[in-house]
Image 1: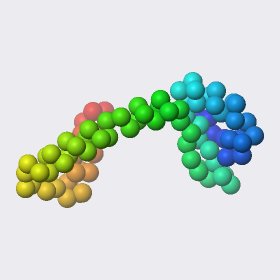
Image 2: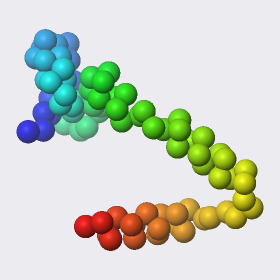
Image 3: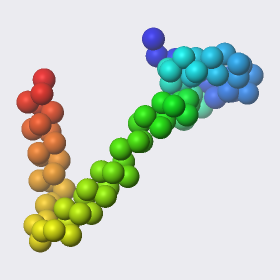
Image 4: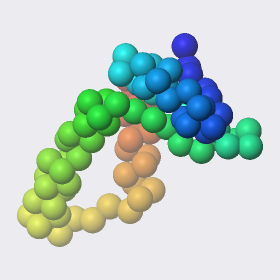
Length: 87
C-alpha cells in the first residue's frame, strides 16, 4: 500500500516512518495537501541510482565515438516505442 503522510509526521512520528522505510517502502510526504517529497532508505536510493554513473560514461563514450546526434524528439519517440512494444 502507498504510504502518504503529511510532512509534519516526519517530525512527530519519525519512528513509524523509519520503520516503513526500513521495510523497503517509500513514504510520500505532503505539505498543504500537495506532494512535497519522498523518503527512501539508503539502500533503496542506492539501488535506484547505482547504474547512473555507468550509463553516463557509456553515453560519453558513444558521443565521442560518433558524429551522429539525435534530437530529443527522436530519443523520446524511440523510448515510447520500446515501452509500448514491451507491454
